[in-house]
Length: 394
Length: 93
Image (cartoon, rainbow over all chains, first blue to last red; front, side, top):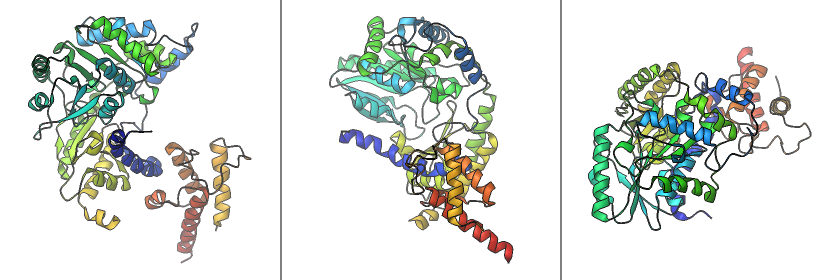
């Protein structure tokens, strides 16, 4: 039986799922900007990489792999992290998982302790507090600064206590689409150190880096600023093959309990029944790591979307990372869920802020080509201009 | 002008053929909710829509797609038959 506190956390997502299922009846007329499932499919080279992997026959290539994943694939992921994060990640630091969702489960269990609290800056990815609660930790949402939705370190310090065992943060921000620059991360690291000293607690930073590949500037990882960091990642967003479920949880080489934490991730995978990714996807991992995608259209898509939304009264948070734009619901609407539902009836799916444990905004994914984005923006403009449509529906 | 029953028979043949449903599988009835009961997904719906529009020469508006009616074979057939009848009327006048 689902506990009441989890029902409460699930409710906005389940309401949206009802909206989504009905809107899906529109088939390819629907412009789906919700969960970043691109209508054009995966990025170039991805399908070929999977095909080559399947054809590269090897003994036991489709059979069980060890808990935590095959060593060759774990080492490939570690080598890539060592290069991108300028830290000596090794095979024992990486536990492969079927996507970031599973990696989050393991990271929370490794970071957690009985009676522990997880501070989650909000707006946050919809499942973050759900998973914290589900593994027996208490999620405490920490509101962002109201002016620009940036991280509010004063609020974080105020929310911390001796029970605080972790901070769970999307780096870059999801849904805000905002990069976490080195200055912000340095200030965060200092704040976490202060929290640890003040409250006599050990705080693990769980850095959800699922969307780190969409920053124009070189990626700044939280690992450099707080030693006790676990990284969570999914290959699905960069390669647009989200359904193939490939990711990992990784221990920062600077973690004071590096070896123990690495072993714990694997042990929790066994205990919680979190299987390794499929053997095929594990073997595809090195080929996927070798792919470099042309993201040059992204800044044009961002500009188009930001300008288009602003023009129709949906003031956006200026994005400089991720595939997302987060924008205010226009005046005259009772809320984000009502606006999103009205858009769905007009054939545009966006995610309401309620799913991100926030209010008054909607999130759009820029995973559609320019012509479909333009059509979506036209429809958004029509809907935004007619809040009376809501009364007619009522 | 096709009757709703003619349309239903045609749609059922399409669904069974396109989505690999055995002709004798009685779990798929004409009143079965195609989406909720897992016979068609969103990609399959695009194919179904293309089929009925091509086969019966109608354009199904968004409101009809989003209605409760457009969920079962009988429901799809009723919508399409009405559209086809309306088109025939328009052509006559």
